[in-house]
Image (cartoon, rainbow, N blue to C red; front, side, top):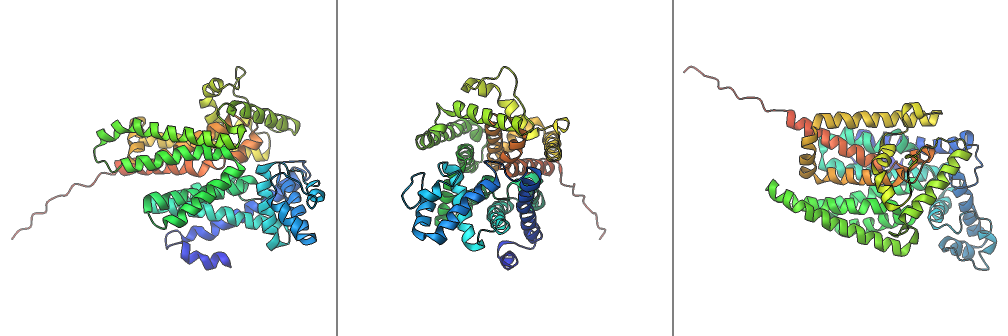
Length: 436
């Protein structure tokens, strides 16, 4: 009822057809995640899944009713324990893990409205994620109105995105926040409307992502900065001048991205520049162990791989490839992996088709002509490298890579649109002689 009431305010005649179906698949995805974890994975996995978060949130929810003061302290806690909260914190698996505890706080807040119903909480998570994705969809749609159908496919109807990006998981919140952050950037730097509200939304969105998955911010910020700089350079009419200033724009974007990494590294030592390779190695080894112990599909990037910074950079193409285009069809050993393999194969076909239509020579010209393409593809490729180099488990990779999908596909669709528009030549006007 709320969705139908809000629909006229957030749609027009062209895109209203996608609003309710887009929300519906998110709801289906949110409930399906619960079914998958309950009946496919067995329901009782010790850590890291949707039920582990839900059980810890139940402790906070119970504390609110038994002792409101203890409930508030527990909700605001950052790993510290007081006499009031000790009996509750002692029962929580993720109490000392800040990233997971952020998600648990969100579940506890939703539980105040749902009386801690899993299904109802899942629907609220789906709605939160959909709000951000729809905001991003509208932002892209305003820039390219004729691509409304393509953007709907990229952002609303990719199976892995609406499945893993809708349930009670970290990925659901980060996906929604990423959508709101993109909307805010378009609002501030391109539409130049509601700058104050959009600025607040941008700050809250980036803070949310930072609190859950810092590496998304590390990939997103440099790409967004480059987008804004290139868009301002686009006002320069001369293509030659634009090409000349491009290295300076890239340098400025790189410097700002470098300092962003330094600042983030000060707050979280795991993501400081001298600890990135160590963090990647620890993550990769843990996820490989999980995949092998639970019978999952494990991949490698070669036997000669080492986790030094130079070693990681050498594996850049393989890491990007594994995120974008794997698992291959012959690497799928169960139904879940088969669906992911089909999706990856479709992505590969679309990529090759767009490159064929645009032509390698014209790709750079299109990237310069539309900075939004540079933003989408740079973020998608940087993010693909980050998760591909540190996951080593197809089961986890399917879920981790969903934030890049809407951006990568949107970038491809814009490239395809520009290539097709160039091929459409205006018809010759023929003079009609009229006898007097």
